[in-house]
Length: 60
View (cartoon, rainbow, N blue to C red):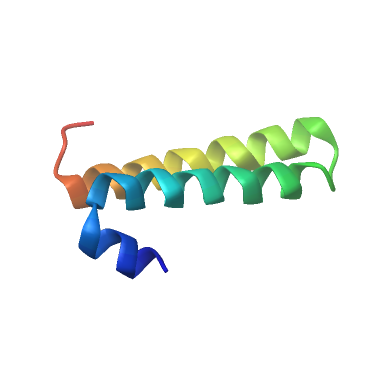
């Protein structure tokens, strides 16, 4: 589905993918203690943004 969206509108595909990622992390965080979930989510966000910047060749 994302591939089809990406072929039509790259920005919409990025927003959709980012939204799904946040939804998944929210569901994950609901299963664990808030402090540990917060650290895990922050790590995931840092990794995601580093990869996102790398593929978009934006300076960090």
